[in-house]
Length: 325
Image (cartoon, rainbow, N blue to C red; front, side, top):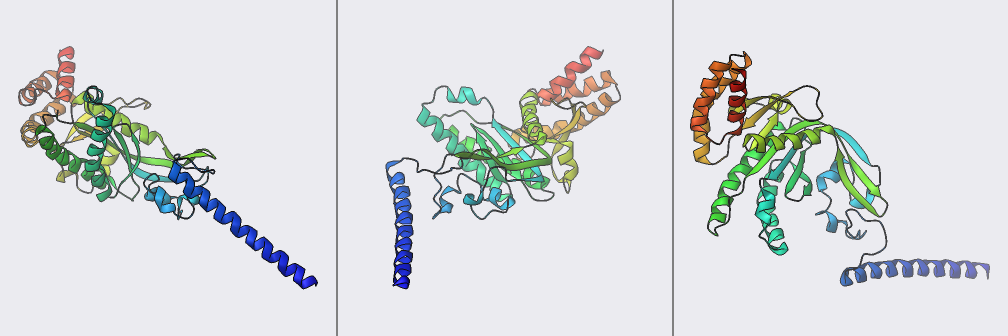
């Protein structure tokens, strides 16, 4: 009699557990059909289905899970983090607001997604992954050891992709796009922040801020790619790229000026040839400038201006030399 009661009780408990499990699964499936969130924690406000964690990979980069040594997003917990050196890539579309002002919301999203569909695969193919989209901006990370070349190659290939994309846009009388890219390297903390029902992956580092500020220099100098001295020193063969030293610039948050470089491979062929032609005069001008020989530098920068009349960096040094005479 006692054994019968035990077996009956065990069977009842087992059945009860199965009922609870199937009820939970039904609630999740029903929530998906009606578009309502099911109860439970979420990462980036996306429903977590423990039976199908692959569904949220588009919202949480697989590389992020790999770096944190997690098999699925369901294993993530608030405070999970790693500290690691990475290469940081930050890009932004120039004059984005004016590009958007005459578009409907539907057209705006279509445009952004069309742009990203061309850019993101280039980043991925070169070993990077997108940490987050910030409107039209992209923050991408390259976690591999000595990944400076990967990020620079991405930026160059993206410039080439934009040349083709702008030809496509011209067929529809759309304005051409130009973007700025800032690349830096440094140690960052990557992990999970938020609250239990709204978690998000993020990175925290001054190096990320500096990459963003380097991207901002692109607009000031009217150039496409700016890299830090730290990235330049990590390149396997800097001479394999078309580059010029932009000098030392004061970056917000840094006590001392930092050396920055422009990479101009991959840009519009006509502009590329003119930059190649002007580069000799630029280097002579920068050499004279470093020696405080401002009159000699002024003459060289004048020659650069004649070849590159829209070059913001040249105008900066030209005006500086004029003030010193």
